[in-house]
Each structure stands twice: as structure tokens, then as C-alpha cells.
Image 1 (cartoon, rainbow, N blue to C red):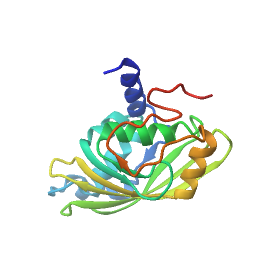
Image 2: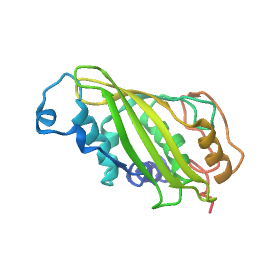
Image 3: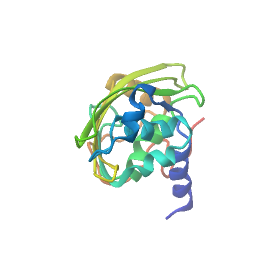
Amino acid sequence: MHSSFKILLVAAAAVPALAISAPAQYCSANQSAATTKYPNKCQIAQIFNNLSEGNSQAFFAQVAPDVDWTLMGTHPLAGEYHNRTIFLADAVMRLDNTIINGTGTLDLVHIVGGGDEEWSANELHALGVCKNGLKYDNRFNWVTRWNTDGIIVEVRAWLDSALVYKAITENESPEYTYTDQRTALEPGPVGVGCATQN
């Protein structure tokens, strides 16, 4: 593996511009001790909370390497990502590169499902400031499918497509490749095989 690509993946997993905080309402004494087939709401909140604690590697360790992650919409990041590496490089890092470091938050607002259900719907609220001063205030939903080992194996994500389009196109080179099938790394204006823009 190319050394700069290894550095990119470590950076994507270790330094997100957005941090997540989990609501305490999901972790009562009964909920945290409950044994269920799939992660319960408390366990899901704790998994998402890894990001707010700066431990995104722990979060992505709960995502299967061959995850099927679909970003709905028609924005530059939309499409089907067929593994964790491609999702980190072509979606997380691209969006992360638009946000001014230290200005982003990502709060887990609500969880529906989980426990005895294979799927959970996780409502999130992101706030931040893009490099061009654009206020990044995005509400979105990750619908996650879990396996019995507590690993995310599929994600279907909805978000504010217009805001993501604006953040990407106004904060990185306007030249990007749109595709809805993400089976290979896409060289982009900022990311794999490209110089970071200031």
C-alpha cells in the first residue's frame, strides 16, 4: 500500500472535524445491562460516542470492512460505497476537508430500533463552519443494520444534499467526479493522490 494512502486512512479514522456526543437518556442501568440479539440503544449511543471522545478508530472498528454504505441524494458524495476504506477516503475526508478544524460537532439526537431489531435509525445533527465561512448546519439520518457481533454491516444515510453540494463545491476544486457506484477509490481534487488545497 502506498505510504501516503496509509497516512490518509489513519488521518480519516483519527481526526474527524465533527465530534459526536451520545444522549445519556439511552443508558439507564437497565438498558446498559440488557442482553439483546443486536446492540441496544445504550450500546449504539456508546459506539457513536467514541467519535466525541476522539476515538474514531473505535467507532470504525464497529463498522465492517466490507460495509455497504449508501449516501442518498445527488450531491458530490452521493452513491454506494462498497467498503469502509473507500467511504473514509472518498466521503469522510472530502467532507472533513471542507470544515474548519475545531468548529464541528455532530450530536446523536435520537435512536429508533436496535436491541432485538437488526436495524436502527440514528438521527444526527451536525454543526460547523466551512473554510469559506458557510454555516454547516445539517440534520440527517443513518439507518444502520447490525450483525449479532455488534458490527455495522450496512448504512443508508439521508442528509441535506443541497448543503453538502454547496460545502463541497465551494470549498474544494469545482472539478469532481460524480458516480453513484463507489467500487474503487476516486481521485478527487482533495484526497487520494492529490495535494491538499489551502
